[in-house]
Length: 123
Image (cartoon, rainbow, N blue to C red):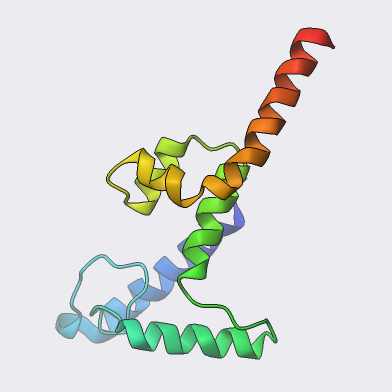
């Protein structure tokens, strides 16, 4: 069974394929997941502007685009994903950067792991 994320990415891939065909030789294929219809790199300002519009349209509290990165990292760590894997996804050069940035998540994780160990050892 495919996850919602994989399904969304496959739909997006189909859209990009149609845009490539429509643009023909004018399409700049940089193998991007998110790009304008000509395949070029999306302007960071346009991405932020679009994101802000979607947040407002969804009637969500004001959040910054970069907050998504922190939410992603925190969610992964809370799910018990290995911190090295999280560091690689974030592009951190060292796991210590990830651990120091997201250390606020770790105290809860350590207690949960201790509880699991306690249950395993003592029932």
